Amino acid sequence: MFSVMSVGRILILCAAFAAQAHCAERIALLPFADPEAHGDAKALINVSARAALFRRKLDLIPEDSVAQVLRELRIRNTATPSSDEIRAVADSLGAEFVLVGTIHQFNVNETFTEATISARLIHAAEARMVWSNWVAVTGGGETALFSKPVIENPKRVARAIARKLFATIRTTERLNAAQVTAIYSKLSAPQNLVACSKIAIIPLFSESPESQSGQMIADLLVTELSRKGFNVAEPGSVRNVMLACDDLRHGQSVDPVSKALADSLGVDVVLTGTISSLTDSRSAILGTIPEVGLEMRMIDANAGTLIWARNLERHGAQQFAPFMTGITHSPAKLTQKLIRDMVDDLPTVRKRTTS
Image 1 (spheres, rainbow, N blue to C red):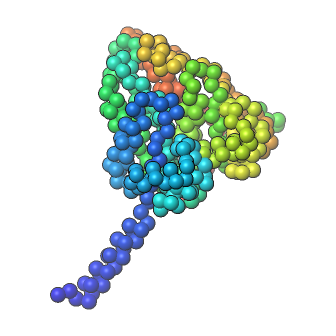
Image 2 (image 1 turned 180 degrees about the vertical axis):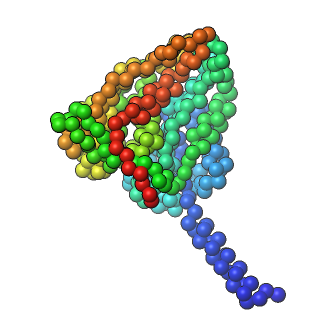
Image 3 (image 1 turned 60 degrees about the vertical axis):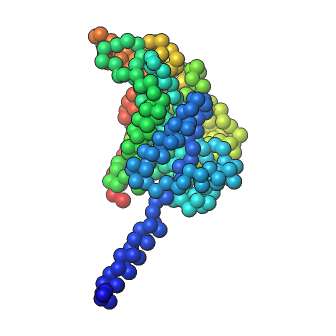
């Protein structure tokens, strides 16, 4: 027979388990967006993404329930839903977080593999991004010694890239991390610091053959700036402000949009630019060594003044490479290296947080 004390302990344990279950961080995974409709890529990535997240022991809301709510709310843009849409989805499903993603590239054949996807985890109540990642899986290219092997099976590519994408996912803020608080401006007169408590990214205007490259690089910037310690405005909220301004001209004149972002989202700095050149993946299949060229600029959102600008170029074989080793065959990988170096070189002031 159970003693009164034993029964009491059981009740306490049951209550603890119930509270833990009630506080579970439920996640609504929206279907990955695929702007260029890469064949079966969307179905493969969605299945692989859920499998990868289950392996991470995350509490995912059933796919059918998410699909039904999206239909009821008439939400079609699953890449950059607005703050109101995120909250509506979360409220309908009892979710604490909404997870969104985009398939930027999914090229798989016997000669060359290049798949690129990105994702963001959004705290629904605050419409605040708590995690983001941008990854690429590549292989093959021009015949070269020590080149990565081609992955010809699309299912294998989907599984590999989903596991890589969600390897770092977390639902809490990083503690004791250095946060960017200001940017050194050499273009202002006199030279001074520009506050940067929050930065917004406007997708780049693209002059390259890759029609979605502006959004792809914008999503890459979200990940790399967050890694550096920038507080990046949620892209869905930024897009909503641009729609309200009736201005989706990526990378063009952004003065009115910058002021609206400052007023609506508390943004201090806006980052945008132009893609002057970017070798497309079809050329990489033929063995062309890729090139990328970007014209980047930062704008003080409150003053509307230019505070930083750079012309950036990178070639897949900039350094001496005997026997064709050390060459970057993937345009996506080359762009990632360029953006990462750019972000690391930004003249910033960072303050370490303790909570």
